[in-house]
Image 1 (cartoon, rainbow, N blue to C red):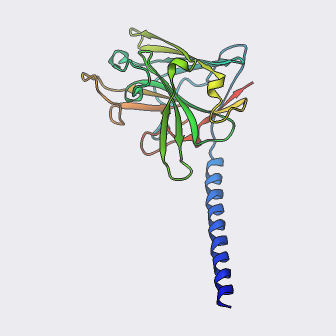
Image 2 (image 1 turned 180 degrees about the vertical axis):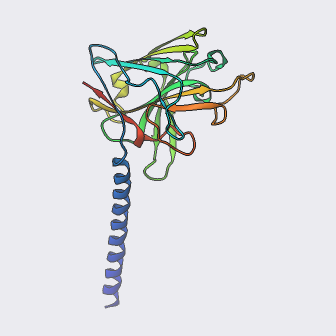
Image 3 (image 1 turned 60 degrees about the vertical axis):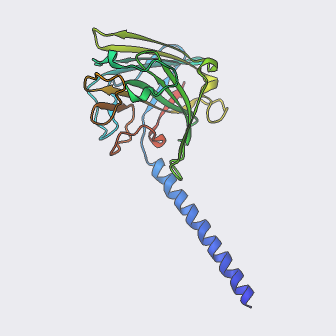
Length: 248
């Protein structure tokens, strides 16, 4: 009799735990499904431009005053991206020149992307700075569970990525170009998708720097996003706020 009662208690506790786990999961999924994000549709014929020239502050979500032009198109093998970072008076105060170094410590243009409609905990991180230094990495961001974070660098020499930068110091603008293999963008799975989750970012210095080792922070730089997570502190790694990139 005692064994039967004990068995019933064990089953009851197990079912309660499963129900709680499912409830927590549903709450998380409901939270992220309710977030509205922008859509950027591109085609194979011509470069399509973002409608707005203004990214948004990561903190507070208001439009930044600086202009950022972004244009994209694609074919069966590549996604092409052209961007102009305007109103950028301190282009010559960026000192990172090595690929896969900490470009995000200073001024940079970034994009995070994963294939498929759902926001994922694995995505690519791609950065290009005014010195034409490139950063490629695979991010694991367990934002739905324990908030752990890991980064695996991608070998740029074998990535197939093409890139270039032009500086226009006089007009306070730097322009970048990225040609990304579609095969590289099929991450975290190898499915051929026509929809990707994407966010784009820009770090802009707001003060002059005499120290080459300066590092961007909330006091000396603007952290701007195509779609802002509207957080209390600057934050780019928020996959649930990534917009949609649609290949038409």
